Figure 1 (cartoon, rainbow, N blue to C red):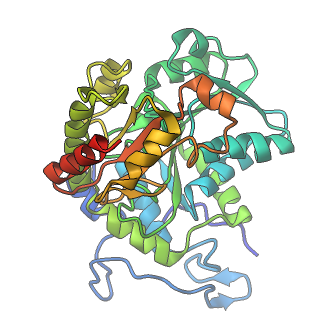
Figure 2 (cartoon, rainbow, N blue to C red):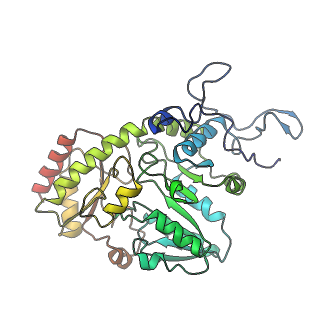
Length: 399
C-alpha cells in the first residue's frame, strides 16, 4: 500500500482572496466538472479504485479512506474559508479532537481552557491521559494564568467562545503566551464558525470544528474538521487521519458541503435573533444573569469585538435562581424550542448543561468554573424572532 496522498484535495476552487466570504462560501472547494459540467461535486460512493498496474493507482486514488473526491471538496472549501494551508474532515468533532491528540507523544503537556465542551474534557481526562499525555486546565481569560504557562507546554488548547459559558479568550494573547514556551495553539472555533472568526489570522496553528453545528447547519449530519496554518503540518496530520481511519463518509461530506454554502446567510440571522433574545433576557425579572458576548456587560465583550466580525454568534446562556427544578419546569412549557443537545441548526434548541452536555464533568468542577445547576443554554435558530421571544416569555411566566 502506498503512502497516503499528502494533498488535501483533487479539486480546485474558483475563488481567490479577492472574493468576499459570501462568494467563497458558495464556490469554494469545487469548480464545475470538466467532463460533465456538474455544478456540485459528486457523492463518490466507492470504497476502492481500479489500479492501472500493481502499486500504480490512477491519479493517486487507491482507497476511499485515503482519497475521496467529495471529502476533498469539503476539506478544500473549509481551508479556503478559514484561510488555512489545508483542511481535514472527520466522522465527528470528537474524532477531530482525538486525531489531533494522536499527533502528540506520551509525556507531552497540554494546557487547556477550563471551560470546555464536556466531551472534550472527558476525552482528555479519561482517554488521552491513559496514553501518557498530561493535562492542566486554566482560566484562559485570566492574563496572569495565560502568561505563565508551564515551560513544558506542548499544546495550548482553547475554545473561544467557550462551551457553555461563552468565555472569550484573546487569541492574540494566547499565541504570544504559547510562543514564549515553544508551544502550539489549537482553537475550537465551532461556536463562531469561519463566518465570524478566523483564528489563523491571529497566528493559531490548528482550528477545530464540530461541523455538525453551524457549518452543516441543519441538524442532519455529524462531522468534524481540523484546519492547519502551515504547509509543513500537512503530512503529519494526513498520516494520522488516514492511519486512524477517523474520516467522514462521502455522503456526510456532501451534506456538510451543502450546508456550508448558506453559512453566511444563516449566521447573519442567528446573530440577529440571539442578540434580541439576550437583550430581552438581560432585563427579565426572573433571570439571574444572561451571558452573551454581544452584551456590553459581558466581560469579554471588548475582545470579542476585536477578534470577531459580523456578529457575536447564535449561542447564549442564562441562569435561573431555582436550579434544576426551575429550569426543568421551564423547558416543559416551551413550544418552539426543542429540548436537545447539539447546536447550530436552523431550529432553536434549549438544553441544561449540568445534567446534559456537561454531565461528564464532576459537579464540584462544574460549580467551580461557573456551570451552575440553573444554567440554561440556547442555540438560537433562524425562526421569526418575535415568535422566539413570545415562546420564551410564556414559559418564563409559568415557572
